[in-house]
Length: 304
Image 1 (cartoon, rainbow, N blue to C red):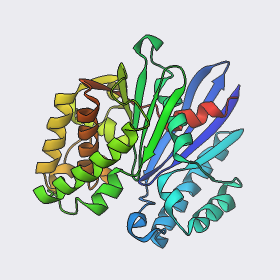
Image 2 (image 1 turned 180 degrees about the horizontal axis):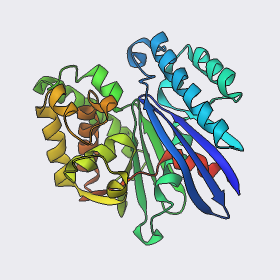
Image 3 (image 1 turned 90 degrees about the horizontal axis):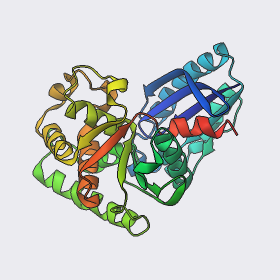
Image 4 (image 1 turned 60 degrees about the vertical axis):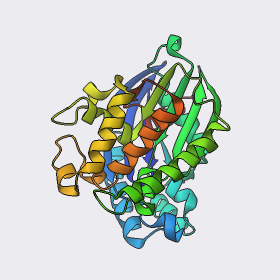
C-alpha cells in the first residue's frame, strides 16, 4: 500500500487529497479545500499580490499538519495557471518548499490536461468514450479529448477568476459586460477547437468547482452534496438556465444559496457562462459532472 498526498494549487483554490492506492485500488483518506484566490490581480499585474501569497501559504501550513498526522509517504504539489503567469512566483514556491520540504511543480497546461483526464475518466466505462474532459479553473480552462488516454489537449486562458476580473465587474453584470465576456470566451473556445475535436466526443465530462456548483444548482440541491453531484448528468438546457439565473442575481442572493461555497460567490457567474458557451460550442446535449479531477490524477500519478 502507498499512502500519497496530492496538492492542486490553482488560481482560486488550493486542494489536498490523501489516499491509499494499492494494486489499482483507490481509497480516499482525506479531501479538503481552501479558497485562497492566489490569482488575485495576476491577469492584470502578472504578479502575485502579497496578501494572496500569505493566504495560500497559511493553507499550505494546514495541509502540512494533515500530511504529517496521516503518515503520508509521497507528496506531489502541482501549481497551475496563476503560478505559470506570475513573474514573482519564487516568493510562493520558496515558501512552499520551506513548509513542506518539496519542490512545487509549475505544470504546463498540457500536463494539467493529462492529469485532469486521468482523474475524470477513471470511473467511467470505456463504452462511453471518446471523452471530452473540460476543466474550468480560475485562470484557465483545459479541453482534453481521448479514450483510454489523451489524444489531444489545449489549455486556454479563460477561467472564472480571470473573466470576473476582466469583464464581469458588477453583480449582476450588465449586458455589455456579458457580451464582452462571451466574445472573449468564444475566441478561446475556437482556439481550443483548432487543436481538440470538441464536437466529436460521445461523453462530455466537466470537472472542478464551477461545473459541480452548476450541477448542484441544476439538481436544485439545498446543500452541496458531492455524492449526489458526482456522475450526475446535467442537460445543456439546464446549464443555460443556471447561467442565466446567476446573471440575474446580486451577490447576497448568490451567497444565500445553500450549495454555494463562499469563495465562489463572486466568480460563479463567469464560470457558469464559460460552461454555457462550451455546451453551445460542442453541441453536447448534456455533461457528466465529476468530482474526480486533476487532484485525483495527481494522486494516481504517485502510484507508479
